[in-house]
Length: 92
Image (cartoon, rainbow, N blue to C red; front, side):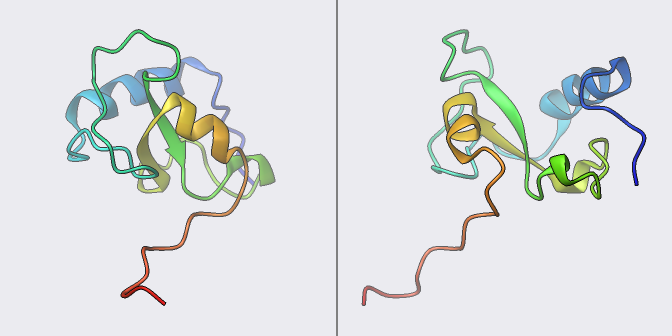
């Protein structure tokens, strides 16, 4: 189990670095709309979404391979639910 916290200084420092340098293309992984890196509106702000929720205690919050870029509203709507499935290959 991880002893790291998503509320500590190492997390926020790594998060700031990841948002500035990661190859995420500034596109929300949940809604696929563009994310404005300078947005200040509460729902539009860029956030780090953990693909596998860290609330289970089995995932290290500092593991950046588990991070995806999301709008704050999309991240909040998803909460601790499992990762979304991909888009269907064709309309059924």
